[in-house]
Amino acid sequence: MHQNARGGFSLTVEFISAAALSNTLQELTDALPSILQNTLITEKEMIWATVIALVVFERTFKDLKDEWELLYEKSLKWANSKLKGHNIDLNQLLEIGKKILIWKK
View 1 (cartoon, rainbow, N blue to C red):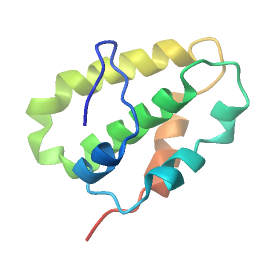
View 2 (cartoon, rainbow, N blue to C red):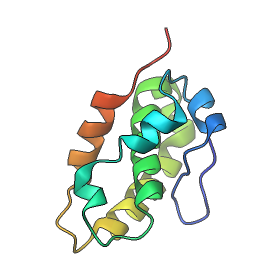
View 3 (spheres, helix red, strand yellow):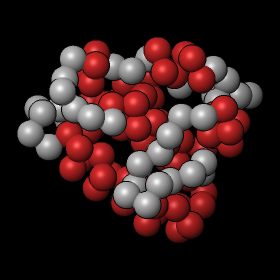
């Protein structure tokens, strides 16, 4: 998984593989929540990818929290800055992300 300098992530096949997800790239792209789709926010896909990355960090890499905590905080800050003024709660997006991800066994 690769975080850009601002804090966001992009959805790629490599991202999905590193995250140990069974979802396909198309499934995750298609799962972009309507609360994001129906706004004028730029970088919707990157916000969604970042939400997924945050969920993955919490679930898949929880034992390595000391190693990713700063990346996580940077991503939270970036996503919140993008959502500011659009009446969208990042926690709501995180809950949607938790529901749609399928983890490899």
